[in-house]
Picture 1 (cartoon, rainbow, N blue to C red):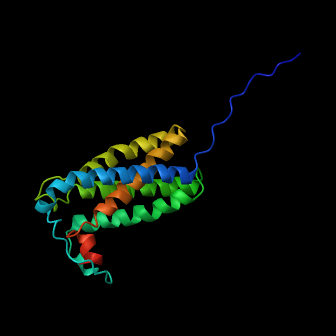
Picture 2 (cartoon, rainbow, N blue to C red; picture 1 turned 135 degrees about the vertical axis):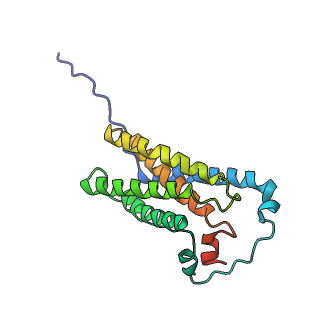
Length: 187
């Protein structure tokens, strides 16, 4: 009797919806932690007397009047957000994915590095949001290294986490009352 060696079963492919669910849950937990840490200081930050919410057409003159670091940051974020969505829904491993991936990494680096020069929130000092920038600057090369070493699952988790944490979570924090994005749409 001839026996065939047992071949280990391939792991199930990483599903995009499961990855989004994990990343969204992580982002919501992080947002809740940030909100809980800010709650005791809400009166210092002016959050106890929020301005009225009145949605209007975007006032793009506010971006034109902003500092160059803010304009560069917004450009990097906008490009990274658009490319990131295309990368998340597109076919992985293709030449287009690789080229767009490098463009996304450059856009994310532009957004992260330029954010280090934006210190409006904390009177010229770094704030807790800058921790996301530092993590992004460290994590992007790690995600690229995972892809180059064909560690696809780690690459997917790292880059999806950077997308949700570095863009979605930070984007939500950009809409805190009194900040530029709040004033752009609601101010």
